[in-house]
Length: 199
Length: 199
Image 1: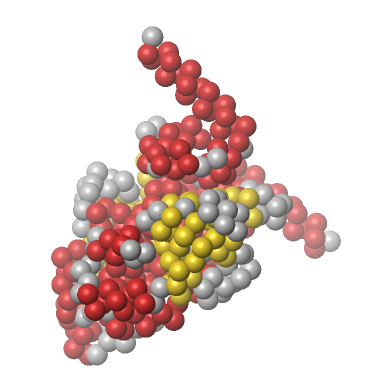
Image 2: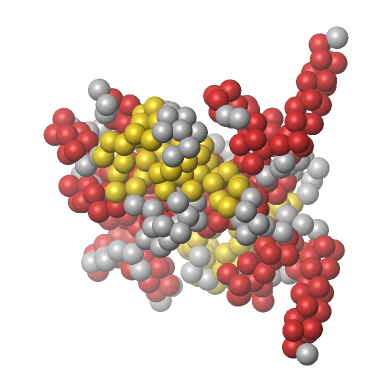
């Protein structure tokens, strides 16, 4: 039961035999994190990719002035980690923090490499996963360099309606690269604008 | 000879037999583009990934107000394309333009899928290529949301010294999400600051 969600996640892109499913699941490590606990910290080498079975997490970067900047959120059925550190085996730049009590399944690098040998089609799965992450990042870069904060906020709630409901505004502001005060202004403006449209 | 560079590019990550090299190279299409010609346009489905044998290209996004925003540059030994459109087969959002007369090798989606079947280790190669692109994008997002324009410019010339020499300032400004006038101010400030350090 613990593996239902992750096997569904895999089977969106590849077909696994029962034996392969067993090999895959036996490579996973189950981990519980309480709210505000960390799955990884900047400066450490990120050993795991994390699949969220339950809960909500964020990855963020802390700049020289101590300000936090959210890079990614993850809820059920999402993967999260410091991909750059995981892949390059260099100390990472991201903190991975649970925003709610969370259950994750972790896959470490050596197990992943072993899995690629045992089940080559997993190369395909992780390639597709990366492709999708890449596309998301590309769209985010385009948005950041070409859209106003208000447009980016509307895009965010339209694209991730579940996040909007679950995340404190302060974290959404940080993801958008604006202050919570500015986000609050934008939200008020949108409300006023839509109330005008309704009249 | 035409394939030397791309085979080296591949062999940074995977080993190919002579037969596999031949299969791979026979899947490529050679294309010449003149300066200011396009390899792809927004609104079209992007059919090719392009490997640069000679020249310099950029991908850019045009916003609702007609402003161009550079997403990526590519010179010799780089890949460029509208990855999102190529992978999803939906109309793309990027223009791919040659900034110099360029020679590229193109790989289309059906050939790529065929190659994955014939040479499964290519899955590995393109996964690594994507990983690296992903890491670059992640770092760019972190920079954009957490650094000043001056810091981002210094990061850019430090990371891509060849681009700085080859690209018009207007394109670098567009990549950084600032106006050419503002980039010009930043450059002057940096020059003044470093001349002070030299005294």
